[in-house]
Length: 315
Image 1: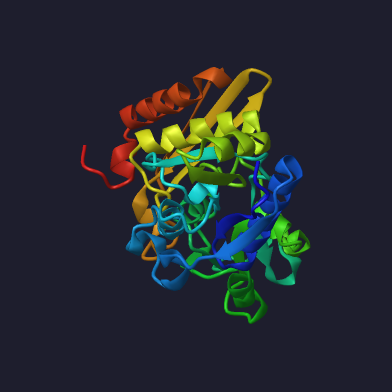
Image 2: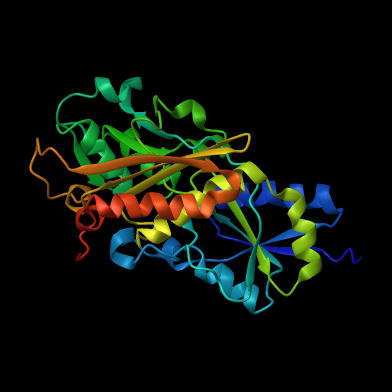
């Protein structure tokens, strides 16, 4: 076995570097091999357009995958929610470490909770899923599209340009900033994005030795849960920028999956105040061995109830 440092490809953002650093430390602990980070800029990092405008799917991962296939890095770390559901030719999802808290959180002025925001409050998010579910919870708030890293988005609140922003608990926690959250959304009121809070560790499929080594980082309950969530997303034919939520929980051998789809119009800014949005929310239960089938079957039931039309797709 060689002790040559493994080259780990990562995005350049503060959160990506923290996440990749956590994985690097775990790889070294599990294998005894040193790991060095290789910073890579992705299209999603340089574009200021809304995710729905630039396609969403793959914009944060394609450059990392290209570096893997070009043998410029040995492994790469992604936020799993950014990973396209289609398999990448030549690459293996070698490990899905135990996921962080999946919830979304509010960072608001004056330590306000979501229920205490005044009517007409301006709440920022770059996620169609979050925008849709915010409008499901309260039709009297104004949802404002924002992009940027955690500092940028929290800065809108600090500078008084927004009353609040919605972020992922996992990101704030990994950055050591969870104390800035003023409220948490339970999954019963706001379903997270499929794969939210989880990381994906990819390497070349042909590198069998490294695939075997990285398996030490895999967390079986998390992998089963995100497999069901991603199967739901894939069967709905919805990209990571669509207003779709999915969350699975593994308890022993049992796996419970809940999914939601909201009409695409309420994820845009041009919505008449007070509009009551349409949405579908359904659940299914199976075993961890049936994760992918569970996701596909729940998607089929949701499509039977009109999910495609809500997402703006032709029947």
